[in-house]
Amino acid sequence: MFCPHEHIPAAPPIAMNRRFALLEWIAPGAISGVGGILNAVSLRISFAAAALLVLLTGADAPSANAESADGAASRPPHVLLILTDDQRADAVGATGRFRFLETPHIDRLAAEGTSFEQAFVTTALCSPSRASILTGAHAHRHGVLSNDREDLYDSPLTTWPQALRAAGYDTAFIGKWHMSERSDPRPGFDYWLSFSGQGVYFDPVLNEDGRLVRESGYITDILTDYAERWLERERDAPFALIVSHKAVHYPFTPAPRHAKAFADAALPRPGNFEDDLGGKPAWLRHMAMYGDGVAPWSWRLASVPETLPDTDWWIGDRALYVDYLRGLLAVDDSVGRLLALLDARGELENTLVVFTSDNGFHLGEHQLTNKMSMYERSIGVPLLVRAPGRAPAGAARDAIVTNLDIAPTILEAAGVAAPDTVQGRSLWPLIDDARTPWRDALFYQHHGSPDIPVVPSQLGVRTARWKYVREATNDAPFEELYDLANDPEELVNLASDPGSADALAAMRARLAQERAATGYPDEPPVAGADESDWGWTLEYWKREVVYQWRALSRRVIQWLRPIKKWLVGSLDAPEDRLAMQGSGGSQG
Image 1 (cartoon, rainbow, N blue to C red):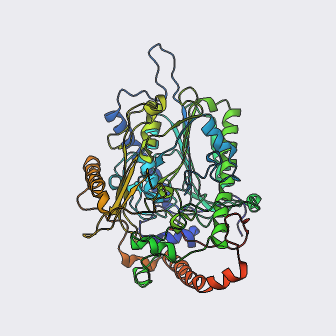
Image 2 (image 1 turned 120 degrees about the vertical axis):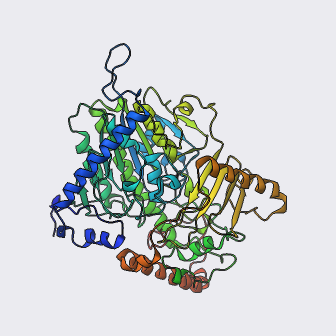
């Protein structure tokens, strides 16, 4: 049995093939020595490359120790990026969506900074979105197209931590990386603490600068402990810290102290829960009924009707959703602890704090429990920027902003030129003046994943009024068109409506325009590895068992629904109090 903070010999960087990633999970002590050397060499090479890029692209940008024109030493701001997983835009107490949810410390960031009410991700999948946050580039440019397979380790693009490190910042990454299943240090960070793949909520094995450490406790609290210890180090340079939480990713697991929170809460039923997904792509109905699936031979055998059958707002999913919200309470505690520490050290007022998530999540909207669609709850995320003296307190902006904008915003605040590979825009002009001309559309792309074959590759564009999405690789693609002004719940697909033909043509043209403007290739990139590799991974079989159980459970529930309605009567009325037992749902 491991004791708290027990050190385990480090595993070296290993091939992307996920079957070898199992070694880190099965026998971390079996591999040692060479890893530290390879990590050190890779970090030194990446440091030199980042420094050269900054010299080439930003020779006039001030470094961390540069002097201002009047000779006084200028000190760029510290940077703290807090990143959550699967946190939808309205899963913050201040939004009022969930009246029982209180997140006072996250709310403080909004009260003391600027919030963005239309913040979206350009890919609603964890790893691609995280890579976009770090590079400011679309997935087709940075190359991280799916979960757990591709990695920025192999990308020629420079991340904003690499650029800041080359400019003299002390950089650190603490938490969930998720690109490939390796946990070893990545370029751009003076300090590294992470874990393999999705990680676990309790008693994780962590990789601290190349050595494996077993910790006891709850992951959100553990990551905060490490962040506090790193922040307390004495340093002469400004710091840039990423705290990347596992929460609130499935399986939704709150901290023990929050396990019984919201015991009497009434969970609001989404207005579009009754969507039967008729006239919409079949893959959405499949995911709603059976989950996201794993193996092509299994999900293609599932029966998918033209419309979803009547579905109850049933106990299992409702309890699952509340655990999702409970998991945010420890995240809020973490935000409070970090702000308090920076305040006590006299550093908070010179720290740029950015709070966001890698994508949203459905909590019953369209009868879905996942992300990966282009629906609003899937692509919408919180985005809060606290920068005393720069970001107006309590201000809100309603322009369309994306996860691509985070990198150039941080780099501009630090006085470091953004690499020419950045496709986002610095938010500072918009923060300074809400009337600043801004983008009028979001370009969305999803390249599928070998692990989630039911979800196809998609391309889409969203304006203030219209949303258009189509399959990227099919000669006879599905198409969806929504009038967000008149149908904000995205219930009616207008793609085949004769009266919307002009709007459809305009949005098709706009998608083509966005593809050209961003350099999207004629042939969409293909995510992940060959399917023949799947059967060698433990993760494949774990997910397949979950998928088959989900499919069986859904059928049993349909058979038992008439009996349940007879037994419980009005249990599903919106005003009923939440029963806090049972669980269900799916996760990609």
